[in-house]
Length: 413
Ligand code: NIG
Ligand code: FE
Image 1 (cartoon, protein in one colour):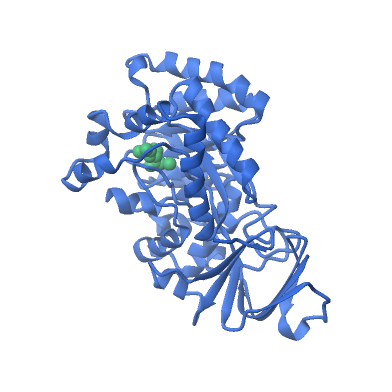
Image 2 (image 1 turned 45 degrees about the horizontal axis):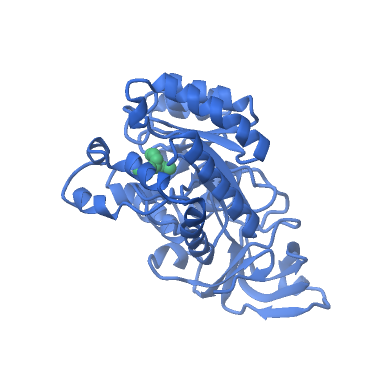
């Protein structure tokens, strides 16, 4: 099957080579071709360029994209979209002024989601999760990372990871699974955190390896959750099983976790609502991607990740949704990109770089997706008729996507 898109008003994020990621000043540039063509062969990008250079192709289908733009699909490198139920019950407490930590102390938060998940069957968990995955795919997400972490027991963690594995099998976009081994200490292990970590790792890692259930490991490194020492222990133990580190860090407090992430060569350090100069210094020269989650800041009313400080220090930045029931109950990457521009003062070019090429790097799929590059998957967003690419973040809340393509095929409603 061959498809030729013609007269594309702007072909966005074109990269000759599958660059790994972009940082600092370079993020201000989003390479585009005006009045372009794009050829897809067998689900893969085969050729592109200005219309004036478009050869006479014999194809199965021609799409006239006059007035419309094409960009690579969003790469959402941080989600928890496999969960059971929701936390609507806590939303009013939040509105009435209780903080995330106060809600957690009352038995809400992660422990609440874990209890519901424990009582949800594998089949039901899959059915609930697939609805969310389909929703975000229609919103333009063409590659995604999904974490466990609402299990908190070996049995429930494996239930989550097997659900992610089933999603990977049933859906055509790249899905990366992360074992979020240390998300909260369950009640049964109150004051026995070390034993909890030892047990969850020992009982789960061999199964994860045998069944190929995850490619990364994650820890919530935060006051009241897990210390930098706990984080180092988890990352080191899981690395021996081939899992790449990613961490939740500097969300409410900066306690030295960023340096641990860099020391263990983490793929990404995520949240960073708080960031100190020493954190920026350790990230410099590393290949660890800082990831901002503006949907979480929006929903919890906490500070936004200081993107300008990170970018002006010459570092890269990725944007992700953090889709989860407690701190970001939305996986809409269009909203994430808008919010990054409005609240974090990222330019549309920087935000789109962050949500495509850099997001791909943050989950290790940069050779497959994240840019318009020959050989990459044709996971694409075709916009409606728009004036300029700025319309995407500017018109927040509007759906400017006309069609989503996955492996060169229209994603049907
Ligand atoms: O990324 N910070 C930790 N984990 C999630 C929230 C989990 C929850 O509240 O359910 C996050 O914000
Ligand atoms: Fe998260």
